Structures are given as structure tokens and as C-alpha cells.
Amino acid sequence: MDILDSQVHLGPGGADEMVSAMNALGIRSVLIDEWWMGTAGEPYYGVGEGGRAIRTTSPTAELASWNHPGRFSYLVRVDPRDPDLKAVVRFARDARYARALRISPGMTRAEMADFVNGGYDDVFAYASDYGLPIFVQIAGRTDVLERIVKKYPDSRIIICHCGMPPGKSLWPIFAKMEGKPDSMEYWRKVGEEPPDQAFAKVLRAAQWKQVALKWAHAPVMFDAAGYPNLGARPYLRQALNAFGAERMMWASDISANQSGESWAELLFAIRENPDLSAGEREWILGRTARNWLNWEA
Image (cartoon, rainbow, N blue to C red; front, side, top):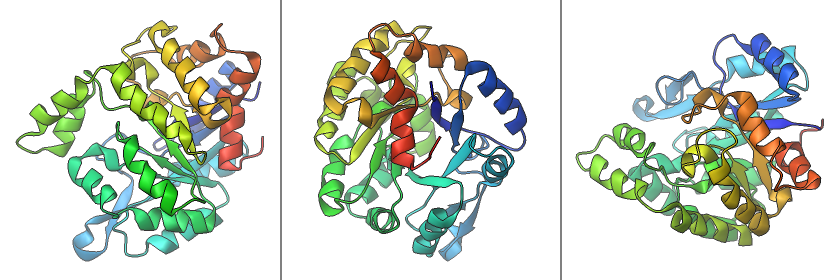
């Protein structure tokens, strides 16, 4: 089976060791979201007025992609405030191993308000013009994508992390990141929303054919920690029924996995799930990502 993990973070070094693990697990390819697990966005440098906008770089991912052809590609995080945003997106299109963009407006209320008010529209406009899909961390607010899919019908959007808001184990991270006086109270309420209710909103996004769902962090999002993540299976079936396997891709995000499973356990929770057909496994574990990322095996 052609297996592609559609999100793993990678910092300086480590590519050779990751290839060894991939070989052991039967994972052919990995899409890297380069992040050094420190300050949000690193490695990056400030641009624009006062250096307030972030322009990320992907030195480890690019080197890994050149050194291990076919095993790695990477996505490019973009900041809508970047004064040279169009050029950044164009460079991502032209880079041999860049496959997609990523934005994360769901991390704070201010960024989400900016998204709703059109602050991210240029990202979708340029991505549509240059044929790049966009991964979107929307943290439960999939409803705000409706305006985008109507305004940019040629856009291709992949909803990150099951589209879910931060649950009881993640909301403190969001609150700390936002850092406002009422952040703890606000994100606690968000984290207390029942998973069934929150996921019902995500499933409505299946009506938009240019939208796919990345199945990542399901164990923590659905309170299903521990292999084989049985509690996540009913939600996976709902997602398959709504989106179809052709619009769902698996990601381990093993380098930032909060629920403690190994890379093998996260993979085999899908690969050995008896509720899935052979065809569904093939699409979720690789074929969907190949199609959406224009990445031949």
C-alpha cells in the first residue's frame, strides 16, 4: 500500500532517522510542516512594518526533500500580512518540493475575526491563481469557510485536525497562546462543547466539493486516546459517509501528538481498522493526499 503521512513536523537534522522509521512502518512519503516546536512559526523572520508579519522558511524540509527524493515534500506557512504575499505564494508554486500552503486563523479570536472580515482572502486568491491547495487550521469554525468557497470556487481547502475545536486537553494551550485576560474562561467554554455537537458542524463542510478533511489528532479530539482509538471510529465513519474517502487524508502529526500513541499505533489504528474497506484505507492513507497535493508516488 502507498502510505503518505500528510503532516509531520521536522526540525534541524533528523531526516535520516525519520526515513529509517518510515521504512520500518511501510510509510512511503511524508509531508513536512517545518516547525521547531518552540516559538510559533520558527524558523521564520519578521517582514513588513515593524517586522510584525512572519515569513517562514523550510531549510530542513527542503534539504530532506532533495536528499530523499519521493520520500519528503513540504508545505509553506504564510502570513496574510506579508507585504510580498503574492511573491511568497508564487515561490511556493515554483519550488520543486513545496506542495501546499497552510494558515492557522483558528488559534486566536483576533485572527479568526480577521479571517471572517476578509483578512485572509488574498491567500485564497493567490493560491487559486497558482494552483496550490491550502491547509486550514480552523478550530471548530468550519462555518466561516462558506464565504471563501463561494468567492473562490477554484480554491482547494484541506481542513486540519478533523476540523474540531480544542477539547478538554487542548484548550489550555490555546488560552495560553492567546494570552488575554478572559482567554482561560473563553477557551474553557469552547473546550467543553460535546464532540458530537462540534463534529456535526464539521460534517456540513462536506457539501463543498473543493473541501477535504485531514484526519489528524482524532484520539485527542474525540477523547479516544490509546491504541486502537476505538472511540474515534464512529466519527471516522461519519466523516467517510459525508466527505467520501476521496476527500479524506490521514496525518499522524507524530511530532506533536498529545495522546501518546507511537507512530506505528497511529498508523495501524487506521490500517487495521476492520470497519474500513480496502478501498477506503487506500484513499485515506495515501491516494487522497497524492491527488490533492499533485504528488506522484
